[in-house]
Amino acid sequence: MQTVRLALIGFGNVGQGFAQILLERANDYADNLGVRFIIVAVNDLLRGSAFNPEGLELSALLQAKDISSLPAGTAGWDAFETIARSNADVVIELSYTNLQTGEPAISHVRAALESGKHVVTSNKGPVALQYAELSALARSRNLQIGVEGTVMSGTPSLHLGMELLAGAGIQRVQGILNGTTNYILTQMENGASYSDALAEAQIRGYAEADPTGDVEGFDAAGKVAILSALLMNTPLRMDQVDRTGITGITRSDVDQAKAAGQRWKLIGSLEKNQDGIFASVKPVRLPFEHPLANVNGATNAITYTTDLLGDVTLIGPGAGRMATGYAIICDLLGIYRR
Ligand code: HSE
Image 1 (cartoon, rainbow, N blue to C red):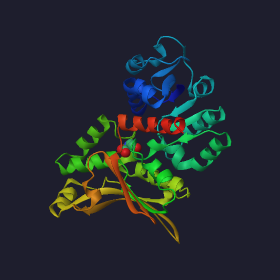
Image 2: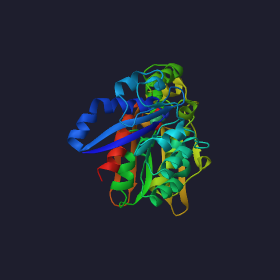
Image 3: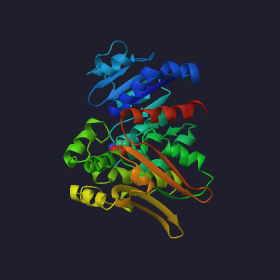
Image 4: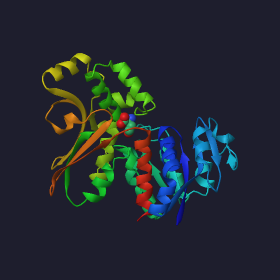
């Protein structure tokens, strides 16, 4: 039995969802998958930090308002001390996403790799902005970076694209890549106001800390940039993604589309041809018969158009604490079951 020690940087929605999954399933993973995951360190800007080399007790961790007050271990380390000084095998980077600078997450990821630890992250900033550099650093140290949670939360869209379709010749990627906006559009069609639907998306843990990133299309644009870097080997700056969000769409637009047998969807798109890569995020009116028109709520979908297989579509959860928590498990199993 292999024991894998984890340090969490950030303990918001995703970190808590991940800890909850371990609380419920760590024994099952140990018995059936041969790996025991323990959380030895947590650092959170708002809730404090704690380190116990033998593992923190998960139910106490989940209930603690002040993590530093947990029994046993060292308290009060900052993020970089937690990364460098804990005995973790893997640093799980879950600080707030910043798609302009990627910080502080980029520095956390670098520090983790430089101290010989694998990295798993659902933070879109470092992956959208510096994936090539960070994965080169990881390779040079024989370490891995898991990034599954950055697109479609725990639905394994990136493993599908990067591994299973790597030889199929991906030419185009299209999808519903943001859970919050899809949830809002669905709720508006069901009669809710825009602001009530957004508030509910925040309560359910779908939205970013600043939901402007969701509704103005920045989050989906970041995911399009991630898909370009990971699947088409072409890093894009955020301003290279032609972006429109959903804030211009009114209840009456939604009702008019419905009356015409159509539905508004925020579609992210990436296309490669001889002139280069074209990337966009914009609201599109789709007929009810279109497969993406029937992907509702916080569910996301991605269609890979490939040379060899034609279209391959994956549909599944796109946001939420447990769904994104599962992405971390998916990456950890990718590292430790290989
Ligand atoms: N805020 C994001 C969304 C979270 O709504 O899709 C998942 O990346």
